[in-house]
Image 1 (cartoon, helix red, strand yellow):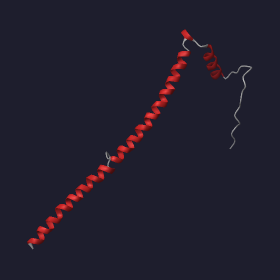
Image 2 (cartoon, rainbow, N blue to C red):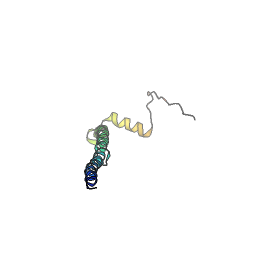
Image 3 (cartoon, rainbow, N blue to C red):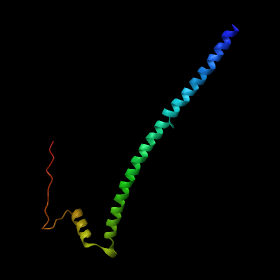
Image 4 (spheres, rainbow, N blue to C red):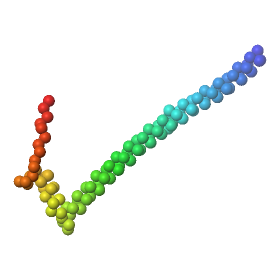
Length: 104
């Protein structure tokens, strides 16, 4: 009987160690801070960096347009372009293309 208790203890300790190790390995891979979560964060960071580059380009373009509309170095062509766009005016020599109406 004593031999059976020793054998069961000898089996129980390695099984417990394997179980704990499996638990930690699973969470290291699939857990909230695991490798999968890290990969998802990297993908999101890359997407956000690309979006940032696009927004910086838009900002540079807007800053350039604002600089062209400053009173000290007003560009007449830029002023006319903005006025036409906002007021929906056209020059007599302009060619106007209309988009066809979309019907459902």
